[in-house]
Image (cartoon, rainbow, N blue to C red; front, side, top):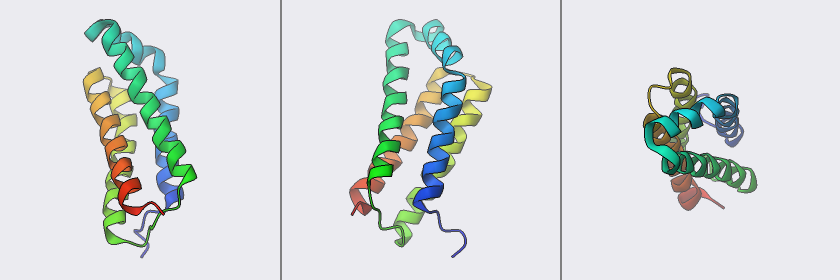
Length: 117
């Protein structure tokens, strides 16, 4: 099926999200400091690291990508990874960026648990 999301495609979306975060990292951290102080800055840094860890785990793992449930989770993770870039461009609030990053990490965790080989 041409709509299937490969591991490589998912990895590309997450990598692009991380690159977009890195390009605006100073602005994101400054906004976090303004919105919530040092604790929010640490939370942002932790979430960014969790996203990087999920990317690394994706590189390392073999996945059963032929499963329909995998495809649904991968599509959701890919959409959320792409939304990270939109959230960063708008930078309405750090909470929104954190929520989107957390969604990607959560979807990836579910993929690893259910479809990791």
